[in-house]
Image (cartoon, rainbow, N blue to C red):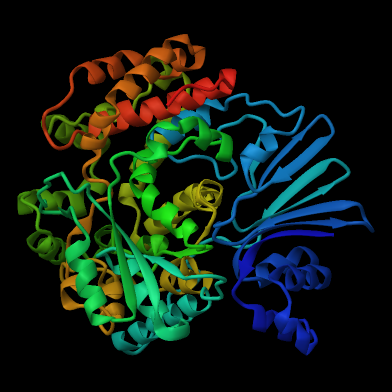
Amino acid sequence: MLVFDGYLINRIELIDALALPREAHGWADSAIAFEAMARWGARGPERMLGDFALVVWNVADRSLLLARDAVGQRPLYYHQKDGLFAFATNPAALLAVPGIDRELDEEHFVALLSDLPVADNGTPYKHLRLLPAGSVAILRSGQLKQHFYWTPEQRTELRLPREEEYVEAARELFERAVKDCLRIEGPAFSSLTGGLDSSAVSVTAVKHLPGNSLTTITCLPAANTELLDSNQHYMSERRYVESICEQTPGLQPLFFNGPVQHRWDTDWLQMFQLTGVPWRNVMNLAWMGSARDHIRRQGGRVLLTGALGNVTLSWDGQGTLTGLMRDGRWLKAFQESLAQARTSGQNAAIARQIWRSTLAPFAPEIIQQSIAKLQARSSASEWGHLYPIDPMIKARIRTEEGAKRRKQMASMASWQLRQAWFRERQSALQATGLVRALHGFEVRDPMADRRLLEFCFSLPDSLYLQGGVTRLLARRVTADRLPGEVVNNRKRGMQCPEYLHRMSMVRPFLGERLEELEASPLAQRLLDLKRMKALLSNWPNRPASPEHLIVLHRGLHFGAFLRWIETGRQFQG
């Protein structure tokens, strides 16, 4: 017996390998997955490509097998206690099972709220676990044993005679990854920004869709807000998206200005009831809510994105200079750091840029701390000043371990750093799967293709950063399909740049939520309510305040989650 939730992209290869009849080409993915598991057993998941979570009951030996795809776009949660074993692709479903309580995993909660690494099997609940991506678990006689069938390792570095051959190989793999995601029922939609990833997915997908037509979705700041670009960020995607669509006429752009108010601005209870988890970027969900609601109203069942491009095709080359230093290529590291400083568009002194990029990761701890203090950024405040955790709880819960792990990443070579970031992204990808519960459609990301990921992990660092140009591989791969102003743009777009304006509109709601947290034992113990009250009272008159967004807004959302766990009571939005 098989329970399958997913989408296979290597159907033809599986049908051939399994020697299935010709009519198998018309079978559902679940039927092909059933044949694969029947033939290969626990080795089946590693032969399947795509996004999936599956469970197989083997009547013969009375075992239960659970598996997730290598990258982790589809979550799979389980509970095991006192003879009860239950599983679901949504934690809210498990919480509805009699005998499973909502007891909080405080360590996971604090790490999640603080943007620190979390365990790959962790959830906000003590009695719910997440099956890690790329793994298989077998339950037999009450014992659950898990192993990984795939991990994001750099097995060997690919060596080709010319750089152009890497670019052509990457382009071919990317083209295939996009094409394999286009088995879509109903109208096709794609997220489109002025960045390299979603734009590359959109302009590539439209070539392979029926009628060469694709509706794109772009979110913009609220119409009544005036925001200025910075040296590193631009505030509106419109200019770049219009340029992309002008060059690729088959794209049908839809623009959505940030709504005055969306249900996710205030109806946090429904979010918890639908998904069972708090949302780190709840402000962005509300900002994009109208666009996503439109997709569902139009009958859309799939939204294409390029979210994982930052750790695959468009990796920016972080860690390249560290790797050069480790290899003793100090002159090359210095030259590259100098070039990067001159082309970064930042106002920081070149000497400071060189220090950060090459020398700082290898300096003794005491020197790093001294320089951080001179810059008014002590190591403690550097991690903790933007998070709403009660100061007393930081010492009791092992937050320092996560903070130390994050700090170690600064001295990693590029391929090691990319793997570390990818593992953290894998833990966060469960949210991608839960979007279906919020909006009723699935998210597909060609940038998360395992074949593309393995290829990108095998490439030399110089393909990502060279001559001060970051994200070099993606720029070269997309140069044949995107406008020059997009390919060569060094700035990044901002999601919901008018967040403080949106917070101001719901300030009374935020005050009510803060007042209600006085009755929450968990919030009293875990959150810095005193600081949150001060932020609510001292409202800024500037366009942005990260402290208000993260400490106050995110803190209140997570606090509402604590209250929901404790009482399950509804509150008025």
